[in-house]
Length: 426
Ligand code: AMP
Ligand code: MG
Image 1: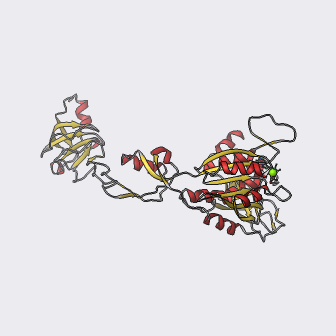
Image 2: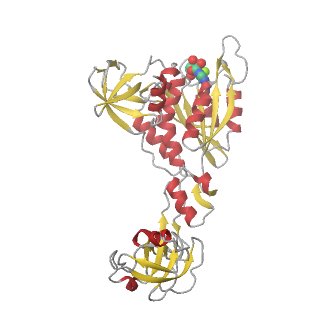
Image 3: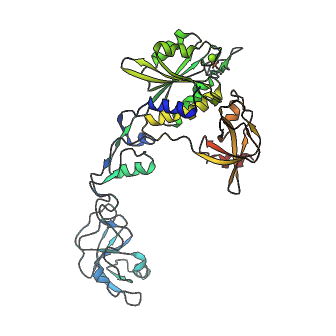
């Protein structure tokens, strides 16, 4: 039996970052840039106005104040998307909208609020042939310079950056319709067991639905990888072998079940025939029977994580081991899920010397997290997993956590969305 850290180390050293692909901009959300992005253009491409107002020569406004306006001759108007038009000379102004290009000659924009435009309008001066400037402008006022956001040739987004909404915005401002990114891993998921019934079929006596496959597929999907549901392998090696061979194109194979003692040791057997086993049991609870190895497919080695069959065990072992492996393939960091410190509100015992991941719900009172068990902790009790905000990590050598003791809680989901729903319910 090996420790969690060692198991994780072995898994991570057996998977590598995948190749790159060109992804349509929106589909790249959550993927990692595989190349440095340099800008081919200036952003903004030209000097433009940061305000609605009048483009002027700053010198024409010298000494201007509400008591002593400088009256300039209005020679034109430029809307956003318009052309800069003729030059602005001394004593002249061009009415300009936010985002419109600065006309030649002008070096400042005086916003409407600092002119007498309102007064002239009220006085029915519709022609607006002249405008009074009420404040001195300095050169550069309200002008956004070409390239001030991103100069042409600059390294805007380095390789390794995760494409999130702001990065999509930056790439779009460069006019890029596609982005070079690390491709998403395809994760094949195989359920094992004669007792399993696929969803969508009536449940015969003595059977259960194949929930693991879907819970795992959801976890895989959440990470931005592509789950491929391969169906159920019956409890005979030949069946599992067929399914594994069908999954040869995948980047990672997940099985659940068939790894516990007294089982047919199916997964072990097939791993031995089709590839190689790396390790077998990990010192954790739930999740002790966990197999890791790879299948050989010509030159390729397809990593295989043989997760336990119990629904909670399969989800927790995926969160602890599968998740970082998938993230590494995607070119992301492999740090474990974030933890918070919480006060445990009830006693929890841990008698068998393994690391115990207890399902807890969290509440926050006066700046402090409090944790309670989210329900019965049997590894088949999926409902308490659904109630959990996180997993309290009880170390191997801690036999008892008393009420009031502090524990580290690994956050399963970032549950910002949750409070409003529970308020509604309450
Ligand atoms: P095993 O490791 O195959 O002995 O499975 C351990 C427990 O997990 C048994 O109670 C199985 O019925 C259950 N189990 C295994 N696979 C699944 C699955 N895909 N969905 C739901 N429960 C499962
Ligand atoms: Mg089984």
